[in-house]
Length: 331
Ligand code: CP
Image (cartoon, rainbow, N blue to C red):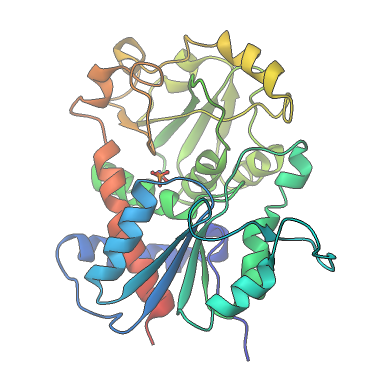
């Protein structure tokens, strides 16, 4: 049996494939939906809450004639063992490899959100072991609905929203800016956007407070294909930008030290996107993956303004996921 194709990060797809998914998503958005996945089932497994991802995946499968089976780790099943060779005489009654192999006998694809609270060490979380374990043991395609490192389907929806608003992205300026947030988040959205925007030839600035650098390997990868500038000032970062993408992420400097990180984060409340900041851009579109903390991450007047793309981004999750599901599950 040949190994199934999985979608863990957008790096799994060649550029031509991403282009064709975006074109198909645009057509689907215009109403070209057929029951191409009739009789197909998608397993949806969530280890963390979701509003957009869960709903858009379920509706996508429904509109394509298929169905979903939803499993939430908090309500529907038990803690899964992940260690290879474990003596399973503790709290965890099932190994992830058995869960993956069994579910793959029922469904045609497994879409999984494995992102969770950060562990004590970044180098371990960075391996993104949970999503790779599912992929290793599943005999049907695995779709990453957000892991510690990546959120590929969000990036695909973001690319579509930017193209709809700006046309070609080549040479357009993306300002990815860290914003205040009382709760640290994983950098999965920022990482996926960074590499996706770089592949499409956008010029990128990354603004963040000291200690909140993104993963240096991923920044280096982006720099290998486009111009990337890092700075410690939002005002500097957004100067002349076509897009301002607001996102918070945890500090790598204080990774695994939640009390220290919270104290640091508490001093950074002025990292908010407001009208004065947007005035420095070139008719900059405001973007955010949501959920968004209004008047902490961004002021109401900006997110509710004419240049805000947040609802297009959210809607595009539906269309881009339909394109992906058709591509991977259609036989
Ligand atoms: N952007 C996003 O993934 O939203 P949810 O967490 O609500 O799924």
